[in-house]
Picture 1 (cartoon, one colour):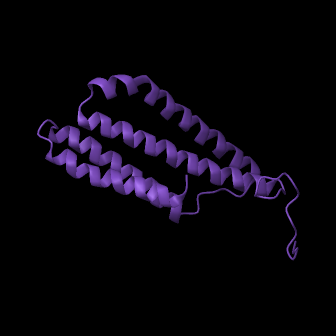
Picture 2: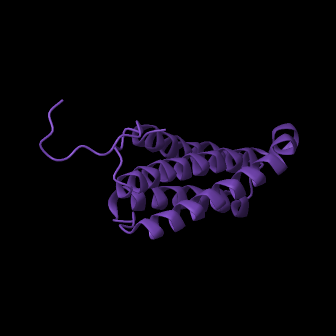
Length: 141
């Protein structure tokens, strides 16, 4: 998952709100819940892309990794608990929110990838994942 994909997913979610707004079966309250979900996704993505959120100290990065992994498990569990019922019997807004939960999981995955890269750098290892020590400045191989 990369930033371009995340931007496209969130944009598709925003566009999907138009379809929901035209659906006569969706009450204003149910539509508002979907609009809030999209706003939260947009806000989260903007914050991840624009604010300095990755800690510098290794123990803070490790704590952040644990927190993101906990959130990922929470989202996975909630998706797993409702996916079959929503797909088979759910109204359009519940299917929409299920899709938004998948986007949230992807956003958390992106966040975890960046945290893992930062953690690897604090260990003095190459960020490509090869396990070798990080090259010193000036290396040219």
